[in-house]
Length: 393
Image 1: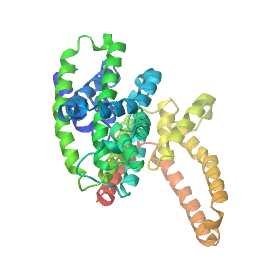
Image 2: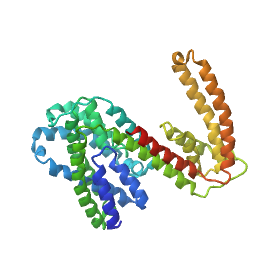
Image 3: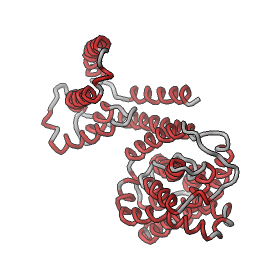
Image 4: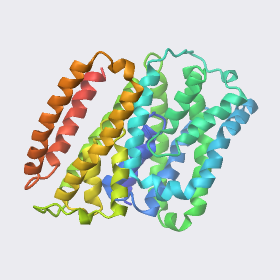
């Protein structure tokens, strides 16, 4: 890793660590762009430089760290994360930390959560008051923080939203969240150094640059966030997370389209073994998140595991039948009263969607014979930008 790359990642870490947008997600995605995300050192680098950002909290709040009651509450809040971190460390580092799919899903879900949370009326105080945080509340905040072991969730978002939901005023939970990051990331850094000595060895220069830069930029980010939340909600961060996930999902579709994909005139379902069928089902399940697109998830997923384009496209069409039939029957069962008396509108929508879908299927099959999916990726990005500009106001 070059000094310049360490500098860029250090700036990203410092800016994003305390904003509810997930520093880990930004570091992993930036690392992928730089071509370092899959290395053992890159994963350790992301964890270790986070402590550089966390050290800025010690500098800004050192007086509060001398308060015994505050320290005890921080210790109680750290317990859930410490237990979970020790038990699932290897899964976190080897699978979750490098999974763009997990990160994009977490960004979207976290964004929706922030937007919904921002609609609540939140008590605000100029001065922080840690007496609001009982030991029971501290433990609950720790449980919320433990959710953020999933990359993309955002530790600060989880603790701030969680603390606010159990009745803690905004300024108090924000600053308690800052302080809770210190034992959390100190433990994560020391544990990773212990487990990854070989990966870190010989890369001390890059680590030092990332550490110092993240420390300095984090001080600026903390001061900015405290000023921002005085008279604004967290909704903008929620919209940003969703827009980022949708844009990156579109970029992924464009990059996927550049792969050389085998094309056949005839479909061949013998390509789809039972194991592959199960994996396609897993990809389809990702589309339970609004905006992901069931067809995009199954087509891209199936192509990535080696199924030819025409085969996976038509299998995706057929897979929609049991999926949407089950969803329709279940919704009718659960929403009988809402549906009652609206059969005319349902009939019109049903027939029109049936006829237009036939046209759309035939058009898509003709389109993909000599074209990629890149245009759909660009369309998704443009739609996300327009949606963010219109709805994010």
